[in-house]
Image 1: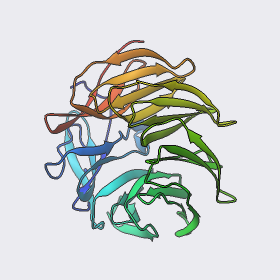
Image 2: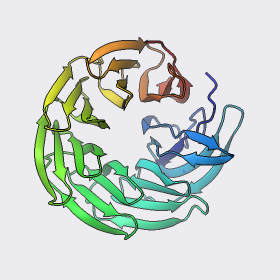
Image 3: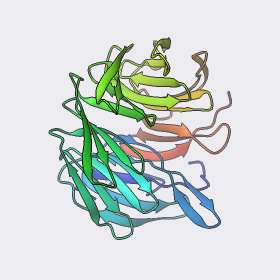
Length: 317
């Protein structure tokens, strides 16, 4: 494995608590379902956590401090009664999680205590985005709920999807939801109404990403679709971006990095929708791919022989 400067993972599983490690051993022998790297930048010795999550099929949420020289369990947080589906850091001392038990929980990372529980969903929460003020969650029934974190209450209920919400993005004014009904819906947070339905996928929408004035989506159909965020027009469709479904998507600096269950990672030029580079089959499945600190570094969390691992796969455009 390639050595990273500093990195940590927030891991969730089926028994209800949290861990951060370079090789993701997991709490119990089960396959990864989704994950994203939490990068720690050091400024004058102060650690700054950037939101991210790692999730496996059990109910334990654990936070770990990880480097390639050592790893240790930082904190375990127990409270969910079913699988933790989404997890992330709100700030340096607070985490948020969402579960198949239909609740969201806010955690104090110092003590490991649950500060607040949000109830309102009627099925598994499958998607979550948040700021320091808001949390937006989507469930298996196709319902999206907007929560005030400071006020500990629900602000809005958004309905319209006919199947599970699998991904959410928020630009500060509008909410974008991708669903198993193959649609991407645009919501006005003031009126709580759907203002546009974007159609371009032939299977469930796995990711929705905002990049400048563009919206980038991916699907289980292997497609990557680029949309205008101004008029919601379809700009590009990469019909066979991957052989299998796209399970990871990140847009940055005019490029899109995609990871797939076919075990590949690909870099795309966003404006032209052309392939810049690819990394071959180093794994059975890639569950997370993100841009590293270096120009040609790409952080990857992947599965190989039932063992999840964190690595850097470099390639030059």
